[in-house]
Image (tube, rainbow, N blue to C red; front, side, top):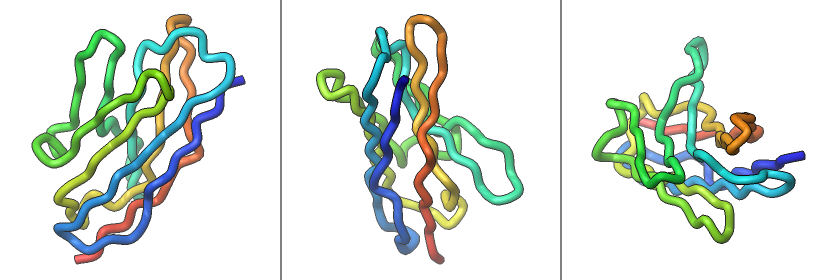
Length: 116
């Protein structure tokens, strides 16, 4: 079983910053990709940022230039540095992992709330 443990969410004013962390453990095999999705109330879950083991990254257009994804492969941990935050970034952020067997795993989610 694979576990993804997220941390770092919270309440912040617009213009502020937060750093999310997600540590993976269990029978992962080899990691293809790790990243972050988010879901705001009444909206579908959307990709925020993805980091592939090839080194390539993808960002949603809405966060390009403001968010940075990074990974510590030895710790099987992915980070999301978010700065500056906007009220529209308010959502539950979910950690995502895909392994080399194309199995997908999700974290429990961490709330990010940005006040105006």
